[in-house]
Image (tube, helix red, strand yellow):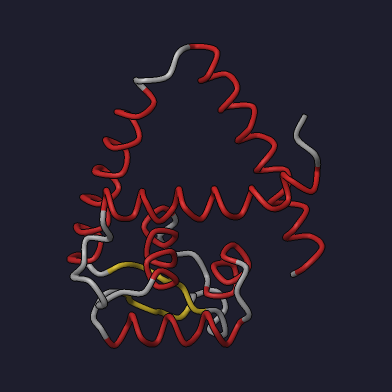
Length: 150
């Protein structure tokens, strides 16, 4: 039987390896070294949620405000991200991808979905059910981590 200690050691190792393998299979859409993993995470978030504020993006990604601001500045300078003041509250910055960055992110997301769909098609119904339940548990754990440590 797997113990909590085993799970505590295995969870980050397996999730990290999964993310790295998926990134290798699907890519980031940018040449190696142009966009860091943290930058790619922010681009993916803004792609899914155009107009998200810098503070909400930081919270969603588990970043401190100045780290998120640095990422935004670098991506803006690279021509990948647009930062605009919220019309209702000029103190709040809203984020959008540039058209070219949105195109790259859409293509990368499609590739990632295709890679994952191929893998999921190899699983039987029981494995799909176990995976779905596991994702629910991971989501709950993620929320608890966010509540406790941010």
